[in-house]
Image: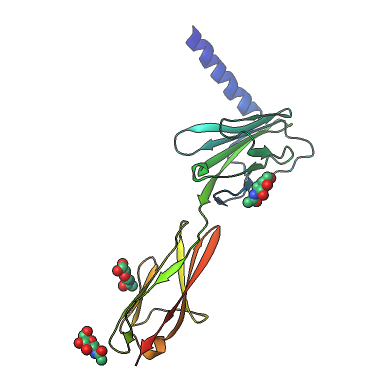
Length: 225
Ligand SMILES: *[C@@H]1O[C@H](CO)[C@@H](O)[C@H](O)[C@H]1NC(C)=O
Ligand SMILES: *[C@@H]1O[C@H](CO)[C@@H](O)[C@H](O)[C@H]1NC(C)=O
Ligand SMILES: *[C@@H]1O[C@H](CO)[C@@H](O)[C@H](O)[C@H]1NC(C)=O
């Protein structure tokens, strides 16, 4: 008996959603992920604008272990999910969500559901990637003197903190290009020069980047004739 009541309830909900126009394919959020830095704030801006407050706004989060409430705002009453107290806010005219003081644990998929005054149900989702800012970039190189035409040098670039996504090498102010003597490791975190020539003398820079930060390290290579 109770099963049939629950099924009726589910059926009723489905009918309401259909008749109110559930448009799951409707774009509410711009395409692409949102990137944020640990400790920073991020905003999921919608591409919706309403002349009045949107009656119901619901944001859910799924970090890989199921969906959980971030915040819902219904008829002006906000309800923050566990763990989000005091660090979330919603713009009632656009449905945009601001999330403050983010941590790596906030990485995941955010789904917004809007029930407009039409009424129409709109839903969309976006991924949040959270990165630690890169700091303490450093190049390590050979400690012994280098002899032109004989020695080889391997410069390697690492950061003390942060998630490095890309490496870029410069010599002087010019990008360092691979050649028959200059080879990069696959991720470009190190470069090998073999053999070194006197033309390799000079200042090398390594620029480490991720979507929220960049840090640069320098190294002076000295080659003896
Ligand atoms: C995040 O938002 C809070 C409160 O609005 C503000 O005080 C803080 O400076 C912001 N942090 C960053 C990194 O912008
Ligand atoms: C060049 O390298 C070889 C082998 O590593 C070494 O025996 C030789 O002494 C080096 N020549 C010079 C000029 O340093
Ligand atoms: C430089 O040395 C490191 C560690 O010894 C090694 O992993 C890396 O592959 C070397 N890089 C190149 C370009 O040979």
